Image 1 (cartoon, helix red, strand yellow):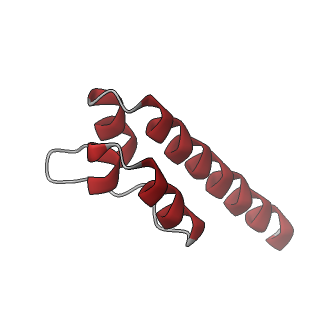
Image 2 (cartoon, one colour):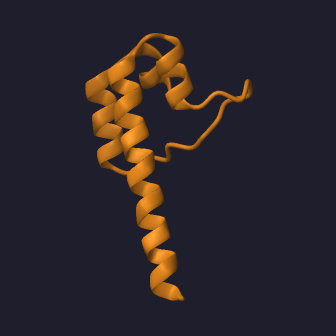
Length: 67
């Protein structure tokens, strides 16, 4: 979340490459994408959003395989 807040794109890429959670929220209810968007770090927000969508799609595929 801090890397997103500060716009550290390379650090965000590294963290996403080891599959860090993208859905964590802080005490104010903001997640990484919200912080990146609010601070004007559009490229970082796009990276995290893409990772979140990929993780969701993977989870859905896993659920479909089980049924």
